[in-house]
Image (tube, rainbow, N blue to C red; front, side, top):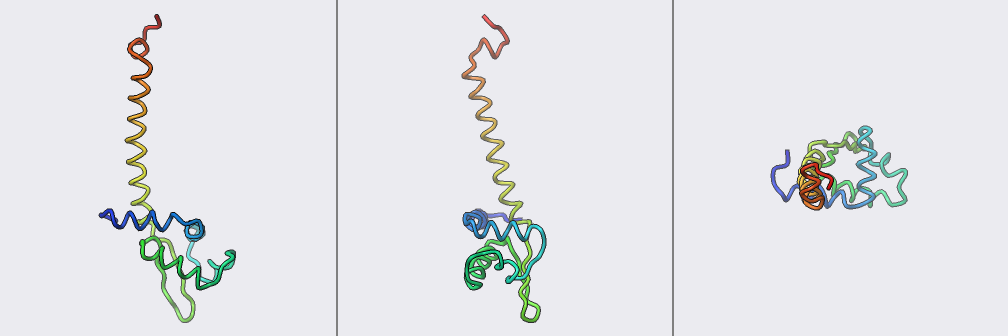
Amino acid sequence: MLNHEGSLDLVFRALGDRTRRALVERLVRGPASVSELAEPLTMSLAAVVQHLQVLETAGIVRSEKTGRVRTCRIEPEALRAGEHWLGQQRTTWESRLDRLGGFLAGPETAEGSTS
């Protein structure tokens, strides 16, 4: 698992781009060659490769070359690290909002009286 903030920064930076998110969404369904990944996109193959390099640097994607074909696959552990961090933030904010809601409701509502 990714243990330091620098890796998490790389994950979120990589996912901050719409094209890279589209590549991840495609790879979640299964491995694909670079040309398969590039097919639906309106950009050059070289641009797609650059996006894939960013995803590989972040640890989100792994690729291997067999002959002339480079196949990419998702590395779920990097995505889990981002999901874990987001989950922690959501839990913290939900707790804070619950406390704020209780405070704003006032002591009468908190005690159950309706006077």
